[in-house]
Image 1 (tube, helix red, strand yellow):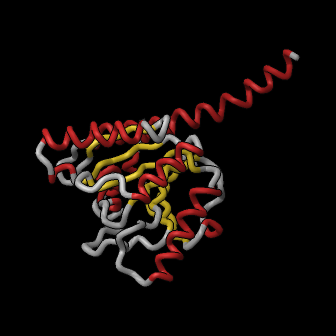
Image 2 (spheres, rainbow, N blue to C red):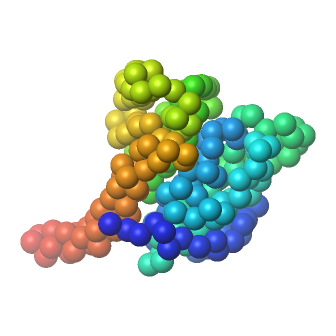
Amino acid sequence: MVNLHVAKFELSAPDIRRLPADSGIEVAFAGRSNAGKSSALNTLTNQKALARTSKTPGRTQLINVFDIRENRRLIDLPGYGFAKVPLEMKKKWQKALAEYLEKRMSLKGLVLLMDIRHPLKDLDVDLINWANDCQLPTLVLLTKADKLKPGKRNSEVLQVRKKCLAMHDNVKVQAFSSLTKVGLEQATAVISDWFINIEHQELVEPEDDEAFEESE
């Protein structure tokens, strides 16, 4: 299990050119500006103020990088969709988001956060389809799960999971609450597995290639 609790802030960047070298493994967090992304990051890392939270959605304006050692990073991407900010600023955020998703080779997993009461908005669907096209494993966290009673919560998870699986071959969907810690253990396990399994694949694949060449 990779220890997410050791995460520490490394830097904020307006675009990918200011990010650390494009190597290692990154897991990115994306979602609408009111989805509770910063709170989820703080909960997953067991830190109260690693990611800045605000009562005003849309305060994540830069790409924030959190180092968890051994060339592994968590990436907090600019929120999309909801923020009440000038259009030009919103376009700038969206450009940084799209550029990171399209060009960052060390991106190996995507955590997509949605308010469980308002899931699968147009931009969420676009991002899931894009992740499928890129064969990027995706974890959908339906946040603020404490706002719903267990029966309604489970029903919503099942509906969203069915819709997501129709769009993406490698997607997991679960309820999550930063307040009650619902889904924390499961989400931590998925993210940890990404870091470990992808790292193992990258170490093994070159050896397999060499063995194939020798056999020829």
